[in-house]
Length: 94
Image 1 (tube, rainbow, N blue to C red):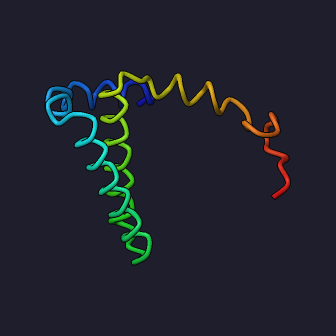
Image 2 (cartoon, rainbow, N blue to C red; image 1 turned 180 degrees about the vertical axis):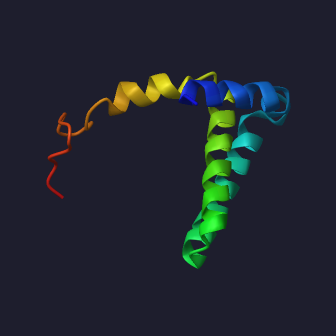
Image 3 (tube, rainbow, N blue to C red; image 1 turned 45 degrees about the vertical axis):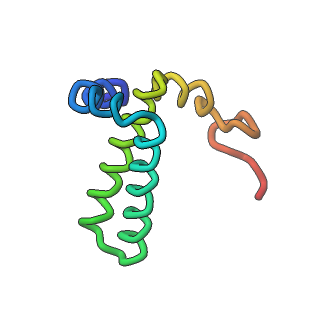
C-alpha cells in the first residue's frame, strides 16, 4: 500500500471522528501513541513495538488529514535527498 492510500484509508475510516475531535485532540492522541511506542521500545517488546508503530503512523495520517496535508507530497518535498548536504546517501559530518 502506498502512503497516500494509507492516508486516504484513515480518512475514510476516521475522517468524521477526527474532524469532530479537532486538531488539538487529534494531536494529543498522536503524542500519547508516541509515548506508548517509547514504552514498548524501552521494554524491548517486539509485538507491542509493531503495534505502536502502526498506531503512531495511523494517528499521524489522521493529524495530516485534519490539517489537509498530503503526507506523501510534503515528505518528498523535504526528503527526496538529504535536506542538509543534498546528497544520496547523506554525507553530513556529525
